[in-house]
Length: 114
Image (cartoon, rainbow, N blue to C red):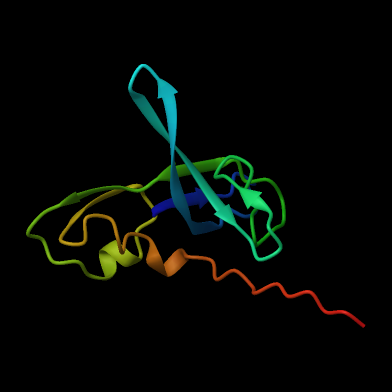
């Protein structure tokens, strides 16, 4: 699982939000591997951080996202980590809790037949 923190680029908005994505291993040949980050919705739509950057506050394309990079240290994880807006984490969680207060709870989409 990888967390990306987004920042809306609209001057009137500047909203900060975060989303979690699954890491999918993709072989590149010659023993090289890369990872594709994706989020699959209940209605089977696939989103990556580059095409999932619509701001939930203003509804416009935000365009700026960074993956949270974590380094485990002896520093205790606290509100400075969970409320962080940057992409670097240096505490005991190693990035697991970084920006958690900005996570978007995705609505559960169900198909209703009438």
